[in-house]
Length: 362
Image (cartoon, rainbow, N blue to C red; front, top):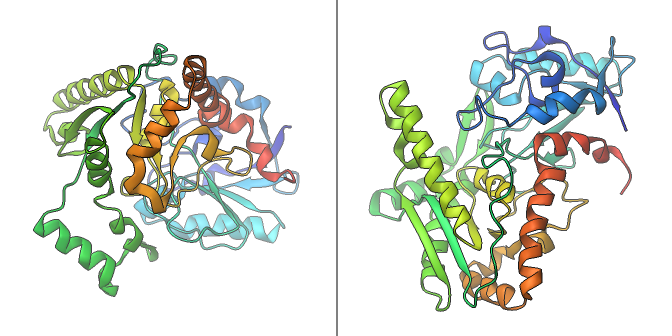
């Protein structure tokens, strides 16, 4: 089903006139992050997007309006009034406006006709909020080599882990318990940090839980900084080299393990989740009330090794039970299935190919 969309580049953020991912095949100038810039992340969607959407010449001829920049871009640039003017223009025409957020914090879009696609929702989900994948490259240009089942499951993790100390505990208390410090403000729109800081040490707890579970081969590379500190390098060349080195170590950890640990970060989602899926490795997924893409169509509890929020301390037992319950053939098949789900639903091309399904009756 091909959707007819209307947008107006004149309403892009005037400070940084970059466009949301949906509009890349038509307008280009995408907003990208350092982990995706200059990669193959949007190649397939750029080629196929005109088969999924067409741009209408007028708002009246369209099924939906699309905010040209991401909501994060307007917030960061201090140009939110431009976004709200476009939303009002759509409302005056009787149209809903599709808004993409694409960043960590749960910033709401304050227009009643908005359909907000966001990777992170803290707390209760609103009826107009939908899960959005993180746009990650196909780093290996295909899944990691298939692994054969061993008696003991191996699980990897390569990334930043914050351990509880006196100072970090004090910050956690302030953010979760003191009203004036429990929300973050940007351009007048608030997003609560209370939930985020509740989970500040969840990764450290998850790592320790798995280390303490007999029968699991843990292959953990724990970092003290995001991206192994690559972003702290002073020169651009040194930063690029350090990022590439960190990425290669991360991908090697994925290749060498049966499963990969997936726990939320600052936002209530995980960039790592999408990288794990693209690599064809089943995530051990710690649920924190995350809103995952297409959750009305995909039974994520069955697709992932799911650790319910009230059973985080049983993660090791859950992984062992899952692994022992698989035949040799089923163990291989789950790797193929994970990659298939990423290709069909979570990659930029797969996500936008199925985008019309958000508006079909369940």
